[in-house]
Length: 137
Image 1 (cartoon, rainbow, N blue to C red):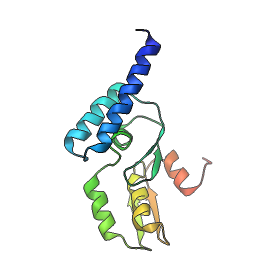
Image 2: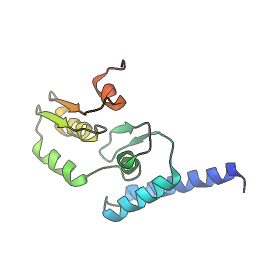
Image 3: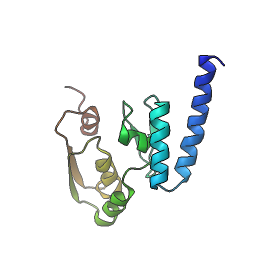
Image 4: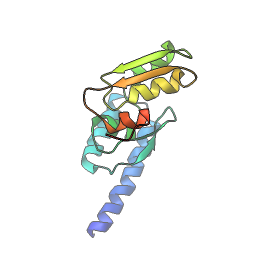
């Protein structure tokens, strides 16, 4: 097989792996499979849908974006708790936000309708600028 054919086979396998992992509950096994395959395949950045229905894009391959891409969620127990606790109009501060995933899920769970919130990270981050609508450095 040529290198181009190999890449096509890997992409097809990646689609199958992604579909299977999305059907599985987010267990330790699913997480292990997602990370094992994701680090080996090293997918290009792309936009994908989370289990909550939100669209997400992150520009590099890393632990959390790989889990979000393949499994569709990160720390499902935390997300479940946030959905139970948040009410319409609540204010949330996500301190140490990393890539802002929990902020997005909070927004989706209750802040979307008249709530407020913010993400804070020690380093400047492109995804945080996108959340706030700022693109300048």
